[in-house]
Length: 270
Image 1 (cartoon, helix red, strand yellow):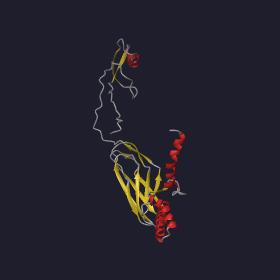
Image 2 (cartoon, helix red, strand yellow):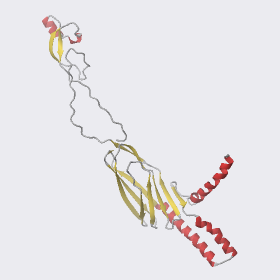
Image 3 (tube, helix red, strand yellow):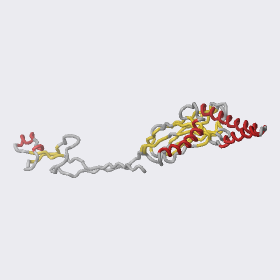
């Protein structure tokens, strides 16, 4: 398909999108939009005008005025609320480990003089098993608060949010969307458990076998003996050798030693 054909085929969806959203969201703050949910009754307006011009009758006028009045009332209702309704969420606690309960507090405030017929809270968090979305209502100049809990079944980094609030007018003609793009990353640590007593392995090397250097410094000599070929000169005990007139070497104490392996389980599914 050529670019010219694509441009011709794409102008209609753009026009419809502008008609459904752009026109009704004029001069609204960012992240707050109003879209036309039901627009087909407006298509009757030209026919009502044509009927009044061709065959004047009070019925055409009544229908036309009623249609325009209902849409105007619905639009003013939803526009008033989209500017005065606020929504907040707050997580309780700081450090979370696997198995803990995560809790969030939610608050909706309606500072409009009109009642909020319904508001759908839609959440896009990816914490497993956590779905705080709900549908609520609120009176004029009122507040609505609730909380939601979920078990942190898995360790890892998860996201709380973003979320949005969807509202409608009493006639179901318009829909308002309040977007909250911010989100919070939550780190859930592995649970620390009490391990059973571990017996550390003890070494069995004698004083003649080669050994690794002690991590605690010089070891004490348990006794001395006569020098034999092959002994290290580092083990010569010079004061005793001078006293006896012959080389003597130190017999070192056995040092408890062994290998302990610590294996880190990085399986994200646990």
